[in-house]
Length: 150
Image (cartoon, rainbow, N blue to C red; front, side, top):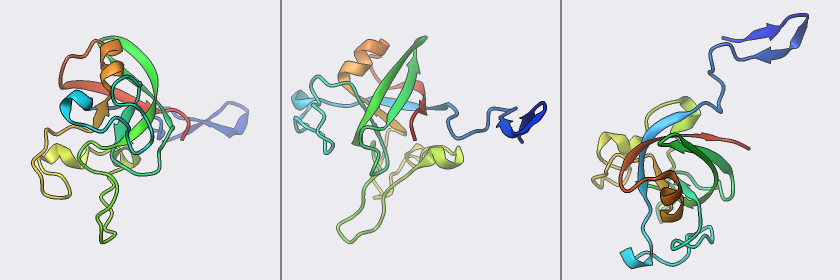
């Protein structure tokens, strides 16, 4: 439900905080590094060992900015990878994207299996090792995030 600014019916305000840029609270996991067997670079060119970024389960968000919050700390970070669990497409072209934030739903992987049928840790966002350090995270944690420029 939206209202309008008094005497200005063109400029709507979001009375109940329902606009798309709302916060999403999900399980976040720390993305691995080359020490964990990952490639040094993500598909979006971010360095897994020392860059600050997140991964969301949809293609096409390279460089889009989000705010992420944990432990009372809020940081802006770019989307630098696709994941966790879902995102992208199969070799046959079937979409594996899960833009759960578009309809304020839970991440598909939260059900315990991803779109490929693999068992998941229920995460909806991956957090780079460097970003996790800045947020004070040491493992799987509940975090809040929202898109900034998309």
